[in-house]
Image (cartoon, rainbow, N blue to C red):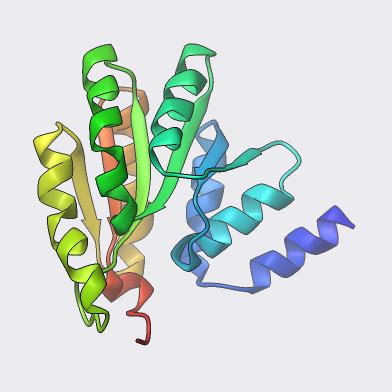
Length: 180
């Protein structure tokens, strides 16, 4: 039954999202921290269906920063999946990343940029990259499907081999603007 669910999950969503999940798993990421988000639907569903992955549904995004720290302390690798509106919730916890110098990888589905129709998403969407950079997080923007895997590969290397905090920003040009 699990194999059938995984096969059905792979039929849904953009190809790049499935390739991204596979890349994360091939690079030892076994823990997926997330707040439910349509922009990360494929990654969330695949991690839930994968018996060798641990998916943790968060009540708020900053819990994911701590989960990533714990994964590293335990010899594992984790990724935080969040929407740009959740970045503001993480600012204080990002000081933990900087102070403790542990690798940190987050995939951020952007709102408040290209084609956004929801005015409530604009402020944090516009502030996401500058705020992350102010906290010492390297940001890699991805706008085209063909750039997802090379950008994610670079981010994985920077996070887990160089020990840097990295955010892969999956822009609305890539994931599409939601209707409002």
